[in-house]
Image 1 (spheres, rainbow, N blue to C red):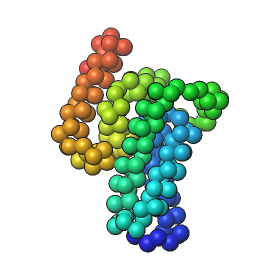
Image 2: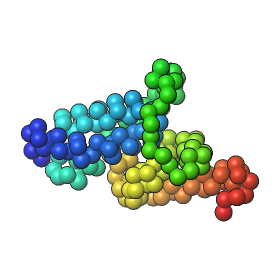
Image 3: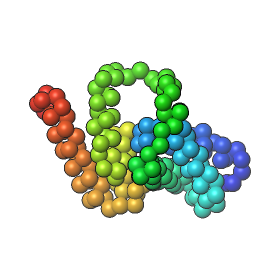
Image 4: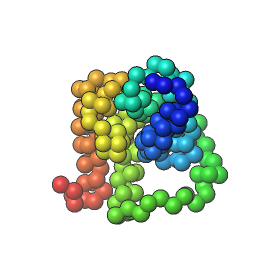
Length: 168
């Protein structure tokens, strides 16, 4: 791809929401999601001569955002920190149809193991198909499918337990 400033700016503009979304949905921390997005675009800029197409750039950014988010999640669990930004009132996010249900579902998804959680986020938040998820995470397609299936079973079971059979 071209390495000029305008081409790179266009890539950033086109993909910044997607990169931020992957990181934010995994970490639920705006500052960390912004840092990961910045790291992903810096890495893209360094590798721009090797990027062959817009699709290649998209897949590269997804891969970097997913892996850096999981790395940061593991790092935060092993070194828990409370930042003032985490305590402050959150920025206004778009209103959702049912914030109570969404909050409960978000907590359930966050309780999944790292890889399963990222697979669920990429599948349902980023709307990637299993083959795309396999490419992003560098794992076999069968692993994606089995992890997704098990994660959905776990979520269904936990939802049924939480709402005492209200979920079919």
